[in-house]
Amino acid sequence: MPKFSYSATLPTGDLARGSHKAPSREAAELALYEQELRNIRVVEQKSFLKLELTAPRVKRESVMHLSRQLGAFISAGLPLVDAVRLIAEEAPNSSLKRVMNEVEVGLRGGDTLSDCFDRHPKIFPAFYRGILRSAELTGQLDTVLAQLAGYLEKDLATRRKIKSAMIYPIVVALMSIVTVVVLAGWVLPQFKSFFASLDATLPLPTRMMLAATDFLADWWWALLGGGAVLALIVFGAIRTERGRYTRDRFLLALPVLGDTIRFVLVERFCRILAAMVGAGVPLPEALRVATESLRNLVFVRALSSVGESMLRGEGLAQPLTATGLFPVTATQMIRVGEETGSLDTQLEVTAEYYEGELTYKIDKVTSLFEPIVLVVMGLVVGFVAVALVSAMYGIYSQVEA
Image 1 (spheres, rainbow, N blue to C red):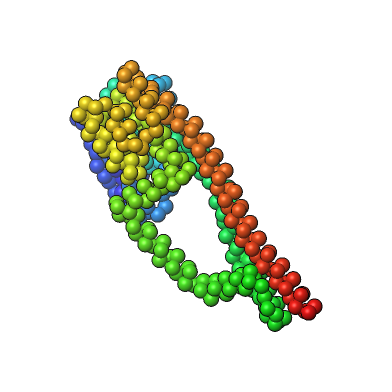
Image 2 (image 1 turned 60 degrees about the vertical axis):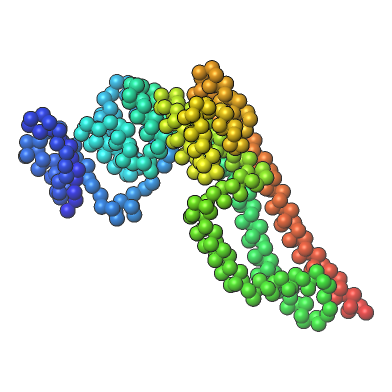
């Protein structure tokens, strides 16, 4: 039998919260009404198995639309509980509908909006909840929700930009692998049988090509097994903190790609820090949340020392410069913000600047990757062509002699 959570008003006027089992939602509401409860709000509690296997994931885009819609409702003068209820009724995502129903129950029970969102950390990030908590204290909930929607929109645009830039190189790489597999698995074995029937001495390139084909045909299982074992070892290593730190440092050290990753992290750090500082979150707390949002251990460890230096009165720009991870332009902009008392504005300007630089870096990485793949494919196909043509000429000359 389904189980329902409810919030209602007792005859004394006090709030009551609890759970009730009933065949349906209507039956649960009727049973509670017969207990002289009023203003009843009922939400079904789904089982863990059903929830995890069937519930769709709430995407960041849904959170963006929710924030913008909720801010508009509050700005229009609609009570927060009614605004949440309307969003729940119109939500196309069943998981989001369930979450907003639970938020409504929490609000009716006396919780704040940030308290309700704290129960869903996978949907609402830490910086989002921190900014929301500060907005509730300052009474600027509608304004801050609109700002959060704007930040999420820019973050989604950056993510889409990175994904779209990687589509073409990935497709080219996959086609290259397919071409090599077809050549080694079907085309070259046909020529091998033809050359063997002629009983002729083959040129060195042809013998190298056929040896490579034989090796792949005889040991493909060992190559796949070795690749799987290596992948498991790497996967197990990066599950540890030391392995993740090594991986992150290696990625940052790569030419061109490392700078692109660095710009992504700087842009995200400045964007989140600007949003939190602008909402009135204390700078140490804002720095902690912005640091944790990066998920790069090299940056996280370096920025933890920045927090300690800032608490000693060294400011923010100087410790950031000492890490060696932030470009000089970024730290200079932040220093100007500290000196003029406009840190949130300068952080936002820095984020906008590196968003533009990120576009340039992504285009540069893509433009470098494409010719590399084409050159590798050209070498493979060219070597095969040279091996086949030299074999044909060699056999022809031997037959003529």
